[in-house]
Image (cartoon, rainbow, N blue to C red; front, side, top):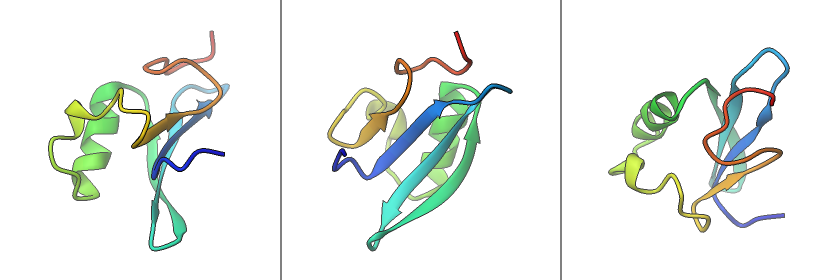
Amino acid sequence: MSSAPIVVHRPSSSGGRRVTVNSRGRDEILGTAYSDHDLVVFLEGAGIQEPDSILDDDRLIEWRGGRAHQWSVA
């Protein structure tokens, strides 16, 4: 298990990936992202400064069950 506070979960069969953030010891679902843009919007809404600059920082974001930036089942 990662210590990254943001998790982009595996792609769903219908497309998109659920995004969660761990805040104060509990996971909060931000929504389902269908693109990097969606992810950036969710992270901005969660109060993260310059979210587009952290998308590949594995200390902050864990991409589970698929490659980073892959938004549909291959």
